[in-house]
Amino acid sequence: MAKGGDLHDTYLRDRPRRPRTDPRQGRREDLLALVTMLCFTASGLAISLMAVISTDLQRGFGLSAAEIGLLTSGFMLAYGLVPIPSGLAAGRYGGRVLAVSAALLIAGSLVFAASSSLAGFAAGRVLQGLGCGMITPCCSPVLARAVRPERLNRAWGFLGAGWGIGTVAALVIFPPVAQAVGFRAVLLVLAGIIAAVALVAFFQPAVRALPPREHRTTSAREVGDALARASRSRDVNLLGLFNAAGLAVNVGVLVWTPTFLTQEFGAGRDLAAGLTAGLGVAALVGTPVGAAASGRWGKRRIIALSLVVIGLATVALPFSPGLLGAFVLVLVSGFFTLFYFAPMFSLVPEVVDLRTVGAATGYMNMLGFAGSLLAPWLVGVLLDTGGGFTAGFLLLAAMGGLPAIGVLFLRGGRERPVNEAA
Image 1 (cartoon, rainbow, N blue to C red):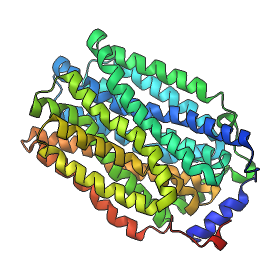
Image 2 (cartoon, rainbow, N blue to C red):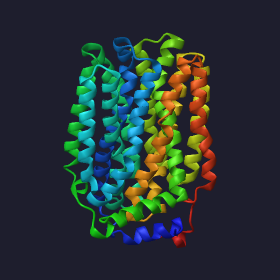
Image 3 (tube, helix red, strand yellow):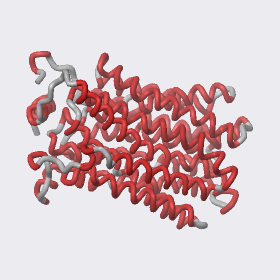
Image 4 (tube, rainbow, N blue to C red):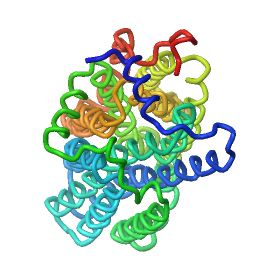
């Protein structure tokens, strides 16, 4: 395989040149980034759902802590299975694949709302996971084609902010709905939001457009070659590991912090959900700040710093002296789990060619979610067996912090001499 720098140079040469001083082009790029941000908001909404309705499911249907964790793990399993095929499909059909993503998310929400058993709830969560797992691999090639390389990190900063927006919206808007009308109404509201976002997305020409023939994988052989190149890339494999680390901590903390605050500090459900919403607020801030910081200090440094800090913050969480201390640590964790989102994903076009971006992003997401799907369930098992929140959060800390060692072996993102740049 060619070196990351050579591939990046090829990638830059293959892209159509646009005037860098055209303000209209910049506005179009930012608008597209905002639309992809709205799409990614769906992931934040769907993943944060369990933090709002888990108490209703436990009280109303007798689900155990492990079963609640299993619902999230099923979501994550589906999320991890679909990125590769959806990324490959996006390489051929472009952003049109997002229509399938929206349909799966809406269907999953409706199935969940209509269910009254663990099997029905699991089916709904799996459909939601399939829909959410398609979003990033589909948006990645759209952005790589439509956004200039020097603005791609900025675009991913916008996109990543959607996770924080979705988390905040879920933990602020959904609890009053659940309190007033019940958990089923929350699922119906979620389905309506997703339908509205899908309509907005398809007003974007870049989302509707098919990829140019020279950038499109059209045959089975081309699809296989794209996937093979992605799977052989050490950088892509490492980026998948880093993705798994952040997701394990983010999802684990998001699912179990409300219960931790309620049981350890006597916080009410609304207060616990509101404090946990700080994770989303911090993530919303962390994504664009991380995008800007990586432009100044380098992508590799930002990734390493983020992994170390989320590990330390998660270790400290079960030892919080009170609600305020726990809230601060949740803020720190949320900030740094998304602080490295933009540099991590914007590295993909630097280490693979443009035809492989969709496959590489899908493969990277598959590694990330496959590695993190066990986290919420394992914490639930530790709680059910008497290990307590200390053991649960220590497990999450290890999953989040130890992969920082991998940055030492990451070749992409290394600063190159100016005379090597395109």
